[in-house]
Length: 304
Image (cartoon, rainbow, N blue to C red):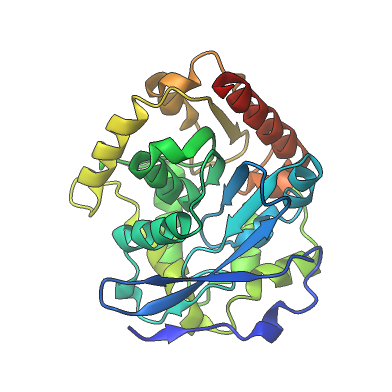
């Protein structure tokens, strides 16, 4: 597997990004060792909050959320998925598969031995993060699910169909512009540049290109069976689960209903619709901090 690594200088002086990078190594089934970057802030002995991004963003998406949660006493971790942010980037599109991403991220999670986790997941952060929950339900204390899903080959929204077609046709994938398009508020030029930073040229964007094609929206897609199995675990998950989808996301709009209906832990929880586009972290960061903090408190009160 040929692997690209974004030069460190691309990440120097990013707006509102004071966090030191940390790195872990994960090993692919073919023996390739990949470096996975992550943020880890706050007290080591606090129960962790895990913030998982999707496509084509990176942990920069959580820059306004991390400090707020740390200020409330949480240990906050935000990994960069392989292919994104400071993490290594396989150069061949065929090297990006849904199953590989679940495996790589599982290695990271278990390597750090994270337990008692409150998860916030959005976009591919949910497709991968909810598979981690299904694989290691005992490690998770609570879930906040935002603008994501766990598809099992039964179709797609019109919004996702449009994004899938668009993502495969555009000759240049302007990542910062895509983040702007998926946010309601106006990003600053420095913020747009920070989303472009991980990708010096198009060769670094093979993961960003491939991810839309991997979402298992047809019965023929890989990982349908694995997602069906994951749903069986989620249908027995009775720890607190709150949905916090946004009011202006054409990709996942209405997707909260399936989680509210099928996951026992979602019953009686204070579900909300937040203001924002697909990247609601850009539009409602303060509200997300409050929601996650309160969710973690409920989870630990119930556990206690």
